[in-house]
Amino acid sequence: MSNNMTYRVPPPGDIIKEELEAREWSQADLAYVLGIPAQSVNAILNGKRSISTDMAKALGQAFDVSPAFFSNLQASYDLSVASEPDPSIAARARFQDHFPVREMIKRRWLDEDLEPALLEIQIMRFFHASRISDVPYLNHAAKKSSYEDRCIPPVQLAWLFRVRQIAKEIVAPKYSEKKLRSALSILRTLMSAPEEARRVPKLLNECGIRFVLVESLPKAKIDGVCFWLDNYSPVIGMSCRYDRIDNFWFVLRHELEHVLNGDGKMEGEEIVDDYDVLSNSATLPKEELVANEAAADFCVEQEKLMSFIARKAPFFSERDIRGFASTLGVHVGIVVGQLHARTGEFRLFRKHLVKIRHHVSVSAVTDGWGDVYPISL
Image (cartoon, rainbow, N blue to C red; front, side):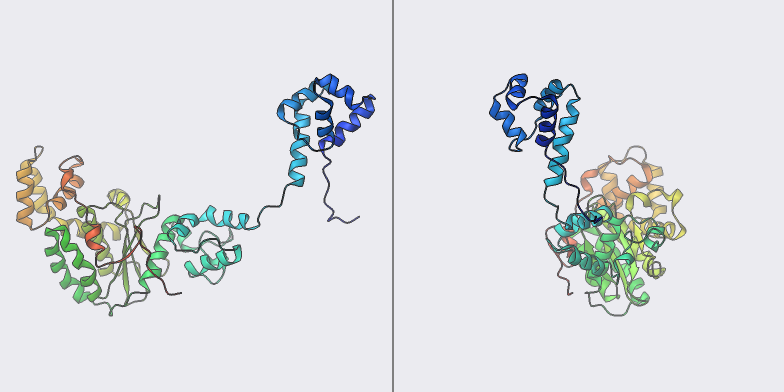
């Protein structure tokens, strides 16, 4: 006998017929016992009517067995005659189990309604892998990638690779550290008004930095990234997850410090930053502490900030905050953000934490918020 033969589950009516023969009952006898019309019994015995839960209980009483016996008979038979599912379901489940594939399709990073083989090819292409086993988090258990070793969540990794994908499309000159250090003083002058942020992308590009805005994926908890396409091509990606003027300038300057220090140059060693994590200095590595210090001092000179707090705390007035910001030449929201970070009083003057992304995106290479950056495949 062939081992490939499929076991046929008999319909529940066949089992009931055998029991009727054993008891020497007719269909009419069973109809009498159940208190239902004979045609209803005939429909069950001939497979034209399924056994409902109510009928399973009634048959259990009639034959003195558990109602589950008849319910299980019906369920087993239904499964045996059900159509085979689309084989692509298992493939989609596997990919969705590791990556936010549905969101990636929604954002049009991947095509919709692909056969499993084509979806696999697109995922390989997205993550720059020649084999599906080389895609992080889809590896065999014994073979981990540097991303997994560093515990970068898959949803952050997908965002990171989208930034990389877009950055490769941007034309920029060779990176110049000298130009970037000179540009820092110009960037500082742009912090007085939100609309001045529109000049940031061009200024960075002139220094050889590819600047990309990519909307965060749900639950990604990522604010910025710094990595290099090669030794002369740094990339800064930002999500504007917190669309506030203070957060934008802090994260930008933080990532610029990584560029100046050459952080994230090795493939697989990208610097991925979560603003919430950056706020906990006790657990940060040295390069993050250095970048934090540079970013905070860039936004508001910390010595001056501490002096201001010492003189005015715990009662900060609107007039004092505005006057201090004017003296520094920065938007009042930037002072408020640094004040929050230093005092922990996050409810103070929140009205000044104005939105800024719509100003930046006017001139930045942007993906998300309803727009999709076109990629040449």
